[in-house]
Length: 321
Image (cartoon, rainbow, N blue to C red; front, side, top):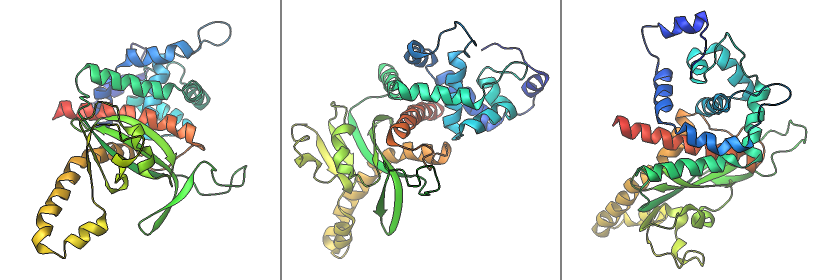
């Protein structure tokens, strides 16, 4: 993306060392299927006409991706475009020209939410990965994670988000939502996603985490009994579900049988571990550990974009290894 550089941008380009953030953005620049993503949004994007001319679609799409990679609010994203040269140049902007303000960034996000474009982007990325042969679709892994939401009642409504819910995991209570994903067993790429309240049983979402071409499924103990459910009885796959922790603990009291059975559980866990990688990238690398928006619809929109970007990051990791 060609644009006029300011003195600050020119000076930045002549630096001696390339920071890690800039290296990451360089990899994303080369890997992201930008034209395909633009084609999903373009029919709904404002056209030049009377009034103020809209920013280029590519500019705001790149800013939206930057916002997800760094888990920034709309005002924080605006500040970052002024302060961080690598982000500004990735978006094709310069201090010489206009920089989108936080309202423009917010309106673009609302555009994606209003037309359900985040889910379409997630599907477009999955289709692209399937066409290139990276997403194989031989087997699936299932998993879910709790994402905390603000529990404060200091807001206009004077109450917590009614679409979120509390749940107990271990000895700790959590308030928020849950992201359920289906992951390709070979590549570790996410092919399915659902968003629910935190108290939703993992098993209830199992049917939505299959793409239909699986030969086998690996899942943790929360999905035990999935093959007996009416909606899953007709699906011809081999289920490899972990045993309940209490049962595994009982095996350890019987040395003669424990070794073989526990080794089988270790094998299941080693295969299933790939389903944890997308959550690790979202929470540790992207920094999305707490919901910023109210309501499941807005957060589902954010998660769909995040998992689409996670798939690109996973491909980047494969290329480098």
